[in-house]
Image 1 (tube, rainbow, N blue to C red):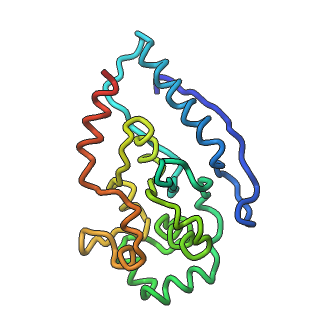
Image 2: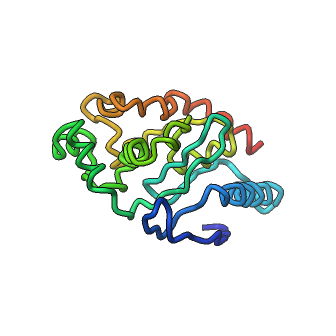
Length: 203
């Protein structure tokens, strides 16, 4: 580890009438964005460092939901919060056996920890918000988006206990298409374009 920079933006205790421990409100995102870019630019300007690559490692199982203009629509939901039992019951009623889905997606069924279920939860618990979503990015890919302006999905995030990826098909699970959620997840094929842009940024 060469350098650690820490900043506390504060937490909230309530969101959609449910307790939260660690979330970021939409109004906080501009401050986070500025802090990230300011610190990155400071490192670029410091002759002590030679930046060869950028890697994003973040709080897990979390989506950032953007509207058509790229504005953040929702808080960053804490995956440790409980998911409504009626939403889980609806999911398995519509899309099949819990253990079968767990095997196909390599995802122990764990509520909000399965980030794909967060999208299902938003669709049925907060449909007006869901209708405004143009892109849903896992948090590491949102940070990449801040630097490149490109929305992208990435295998490491999509395949990590999300309930989204069917390992037998090497594609999104059937339920993702049936719910129209695939339209919110940007193509996996754009990764090389992002990598090229990040290389140009450091120059």
